[in-house]
Length: 234
Image (cartoon, rainbow, N blue to C red; front, side, top):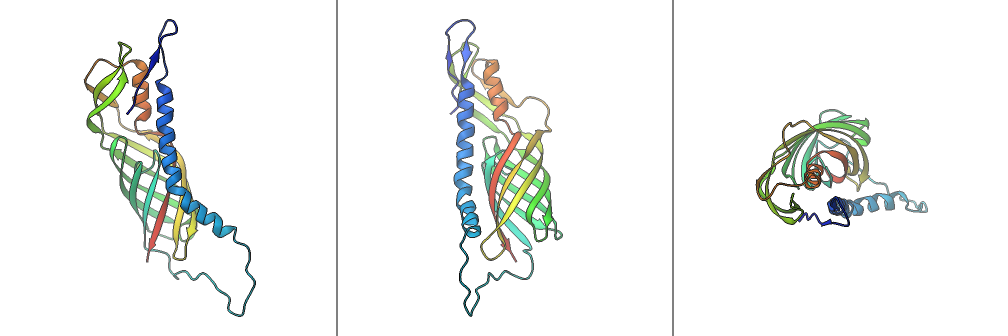
């Protein structure tokens, strides 16, 4: 629940709703970290393993000869391509190129994603750069406590309008396990393509400028910080 609380030490009113917004962002970031830390820890542990004495039989990690034909990916993060939690299919169309299709759920309803990536290393590893389009379905009859022009924190009803965005991002992939599974981090930016209002108020008193800014900041778009796991299918 978003709650905008106002104090009146003087004139004009000073609203501290932005603190609540930061709290919501921190909650999202915490979820993403909890989602990704196990995989990143596994990668770090793998890299920092002490060397083992050579024996007559040297154990090697044996990976399939051919790169995967498909990656099934699950991910999370702030402005993540497929929402707070989602899945996508990453289809290689060349040694350094792949196409993505995904779906997930987030604070602005169901989120659809289509995009592509170019990798700097073969077999879809290392650094990659990508772009794509996302579509967030929005929500109807969205009940929230927000600050109104009467400076009260009261329930209003909003329709969150559908949003289309374009994104540009950099990715860093690491091997995870023996069969070309991957863990990755993503950093980028999502820009709105949709015009018009982000939301429509359908019930309640008119919102203040501060509440309007909070809702616009919560809408899809802005800095992307995300992570995920990819499972290779041969």
